[in-house]
Image (cartoon, rainbow, N blue to C red):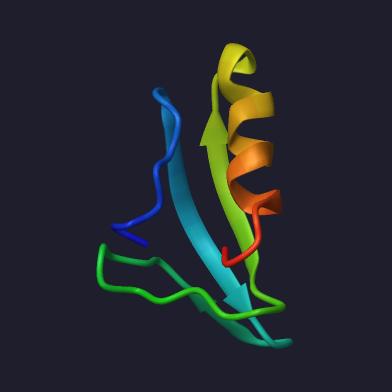
Length: 58
């Protein structure tokens, strides 16, 4: 996830993979299709964060 250009004032807290694997990711964690990303972001940056994860390849 270190290569993802996260908006200012946002943080990935956890990634849920499958039905039971909940991970607190570090910078070397690689997201996979179907992962659920739990993040915190300020209201001003929410649309920027949504764009990051809607972009192909993320």
